[in-house]
Length: 130
Image (cartoon, rainbow, N blue to C red; front, side, top):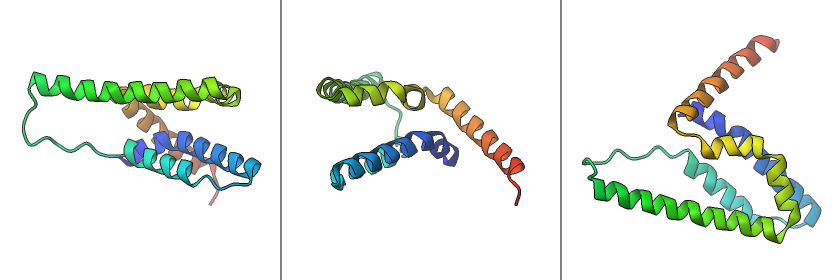
């Protein structure tokens, strides 16, 4: 679980930096956007509850439909933001190497991220003098 947090860390560091830049350029605090980023951070680090019973095929299909609808909503929001603001498109394109692997990873890939992140942290500790 902690390793998954580390795998998502670059994405949330990027989002935080971009938000700070937007706030400094606009001289306005983006309270709503900051809250949404924090909520997203909490959502992606949630541990799914273990079901009390095994799901049947219809329940699995319904859950997949619900998740698919959520992804469609996110896709519409991103597409709309990109169409409305060329800077959003530029930022998303130039930072895709950070966020795309995080949001498109399957369970095995996320475990691999976590392993890579742990190895990187160990190497950093060895390289950094105390």
